Length: 298
Image (cartoon, rainbow, N blue to C red; front, side):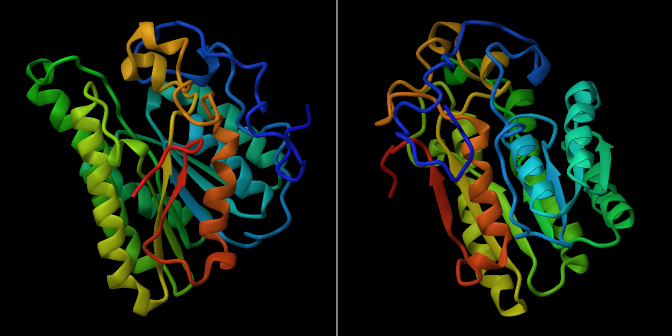
């Protein structure tokens, strides 16, 4: 079945040949080790020049949703800086190669988003490597399930908020002086912000915070011509899930509770980020675009 974004297809049957499998990998998890492989749009995404000349920084850009977004951005004409953990170099190198094949200038900038100094230097290094910045995608995230609140350590709670919320704050604050009018900031939230799972209390709390941050900052920056929006994925097949993002016994039924009856693929998220980054969404500000297989949201 053809999977490019222009082919008429039944979304309930799309990716019917990719079923989740029980597997465990240590955090943070690698696309290289994921089975079955996620579709990042490597073979399918077709660009039309919507981001020609743009300069984007994507955190968590080595795998999953961030990698699919990076591929789409490059094929739409943007240059891209990728942020990722040093232990994710294998994934990042593969994605960087795909972006360069698309003609993009690429900067690979490894580091830990929990470190405020890294977040600030990340922006400076991206600006230097790309010659500016006009798209920021705050996508890097941490998700570790715990059956009970008593099992969430102070360290896990702190790491989850630093990775998902503080890094967004540090990176966005550092980027603002560099963003001209017309720029876009896109934050990755989640269905968990609206329908939190009992085993993801800390993660869900960060995602609700990201929604509020997005909507508040959007109002502040709109008069300056900088648009802030968010994308809220549902159950998407990425290394986040088998690296303790979900219990092993839930992996093989992952996504079955959506109206489409299946998990989503990162390639299905990329067009949402392209839309919010491009001038096509010039009147879209403070919006959370839900890509979740039909799960109801407020």
